[in-house]
Image (cartoon, rainbow over all chains, first blue to last red; front, side, top):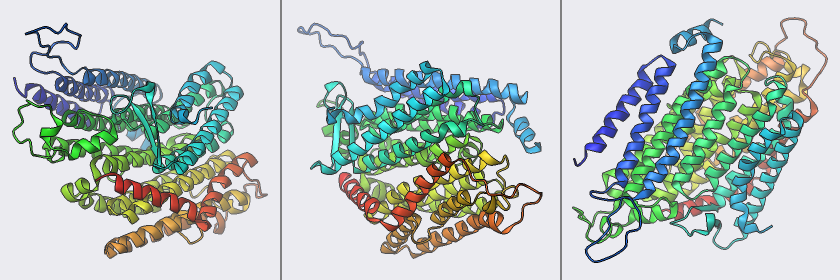
Length: 118
Length: 514
């Protein structure tokens, strides 16, 4: 296993980032942004986990029963970031809907072309 | 009222007031309420700055829920934070008090209460960024402020505002995700999110940060020399540069400010990039420290050229803009270059210049955008052609513009002069005479773009037979613009107040990071 999670994070991050940069379609841009954000969620969750760790619940201390548990803090932090991510996606999609109503298109180059003419 | 609670009230008050605005559902009622909240925020910020000034440690702190730092979340304000908060809340109070008149032409009246709710959320987010001493909290507040500013920008009258808001959303989210990665990596190596605690642990060795028994290859290595921390620093800096609109990551700013409603560009131009600059100062000086940033990483070799190119390129682009608001927006990008230039020297003098310019530029640019809003109440066009002869039609309004423009150039007796003067002397002190020359060249470029407006307004005849009797903007709007721009004149003559506060703030920042 080792660094498997982190490699996944990097690959996902690059896929998302590339989609944001390379795609013209506004919905696809939002999808790319979503993938990009999810990769960071994975980064946080991976860093809190330790090998053979349990959930951070109180274990009755007794001889030979040492509890190793994952660090819950990064998991809690990322819960906040997930909420932020959902809000961003919702707002972005709402803007796409408004853009589609006004311009009749969700292709970025067509929209910019229309604004250049007017 | 217990003064100890002020740091948290500063954030909670606008945060709770925002949903109350939603419930009021009436334009005038919601506006009165929002103005009240804005003025109370200003009062709190002023009281806090006084408390900071009189306290022996030069800072005040508040523990959320009574949990002591570094386990709990701590709100900490020092002189720099107190000053930025004061600038932020005064611009918010002034903008809010004239917002209803400016909104009349741009947002339908039945949606005004929504506007005020989002505006207050934005204020809460920005105040939170400044107040908090917890790095993850910075991210959360940054997102509150950014999400609400995307909405505010999208309310602009022209359909371009929607595209500008979307582009800002994409770039802003990439920026804040970078910041999130940086925070995560820093947490990974130190196990703490409290800024003061972070800066302490970053200079410790790996062996002393981790528990005994952990298998570390090289326990003697200081934490801040690990590659993970370098990556964290890089992610934080790039993310903040995006939020700050540092050249060449400024692409979102001109479109956003040029298409947003006048009241929104007035507020955001003076506050949002300034708060991002504040976070950059915190990250570089409080958390990572001068030695790490300037000796180990050598950030000045990246920031100085970028700041200089921001000044020169953005000022040149501003000269070629036909639209007043786009011109001001590009001038903002150039002024952000001056801010970052001050920081990139890594000296106390440079930092003082940066902080003074933060203060001055916030007032100037907000005032100028407000003047443009004043012009927009009397005529629809905001291009250089359509303002021909405006000096006679709106004498007081254009006079305010000239005062702001002189400040942008840095003419003596305006506050812009003080910050340029401090910046040039800081550059010369370090022996960067070429940088000093380029700063002056940047000011000359500012002369050109301000002159183009002055020429059009005072020395060109209007094309058609427009009514030529003087008719200034509504008195309230004009008064607000003069308050902001008059302040730049006052602080240009009585320079002691901002300069002495900035000098103390710079000294404590330089001393804070070891």
